[in-house]
Image (cartoon, rainbow, N blue to C red; front, side, top):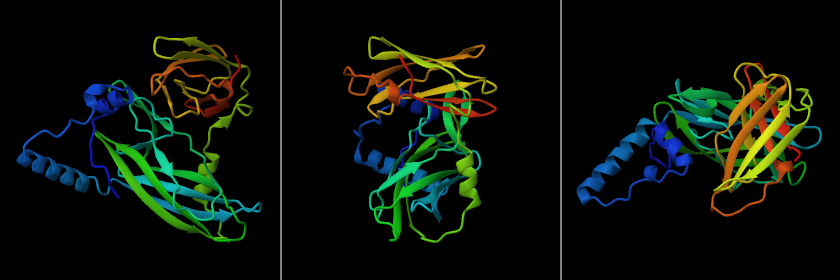
Amino acid sequence: MFQNSRVFSPTCVLALNRLCPICEPMKTTALTTALALTLMISAVQAQSFDRVVQAEVLPGWRNDDGSHTAALRITLNPGWKTYWRAPGDAGIPPRITWRGSRNIEAVDLDWPTPEVFDQNGMRSIGYSEEVIIPVHVAPQTQGKPVTVKAQLEIGVCRDICVPQTIKVKAELPPQGARDARIATAIVDQPLSAQDAHVGAVTCKVDPTKDGLRLTATVNMPHAGGTEVAVIETGDPQIWVAEGTTTRRGNTLVAQTEMMHVDEVPFMLDRSAIRITVLGSKHAVDIRGCSG
């Protein structure tokens, strides 16, 4: 289950996500005895975190249109958390691949509304104890068996952060009963912009030394408490810094800076911008913005 036993403190994770060179794993230059000791420590660490997190496929049910609704269920020991698709500077981005699945044309995930964690001045976004992520599967051939095979590369954190690799596999039944756990997770989604009565959404883009600064202005009712706006570009090659969120009346302003991971100039597609506003009453999912 665990193919990566490196352990990081949350501070080091924050630095790694900010492209800090001081937290790169040190090259092994010690003597043979020191190397052996390191390997022994890594083995002990891997064993000690062996049962921190488990994952499984909830097989779900077949829909009238031939698609299938299933879910990934991730459970964690008390005090541990894992991360949302945009985890913040202090989080570890999850990566899920479906290589080896059979009779699958497309897979779409519905990430439930996450929590915002603040620890020692660092912010991360994710889930504690358990998360059920609905998975919508479009089969290549209707009426034939569907096999889901997934590899989850996720981070789990408490006082330290541990990257984990977990493999799961399941047959999706052509006739399955609706699972209340999946149905609840489907409901636990951010509101759409329309349902949240979002008005105009504009994005101003300014050049910076290393990339771009984006300022999003959103006309919307308050989502409750201390709002956190998360901006995504849809391009994994563009690194987005942890931004700021301010509000005045019905206007929310979110600002962040972006740079290409290869440190090259890049174009920003405003229609692909995704802004998620997390509040104490609800969350809101906003797709696209104008200039």
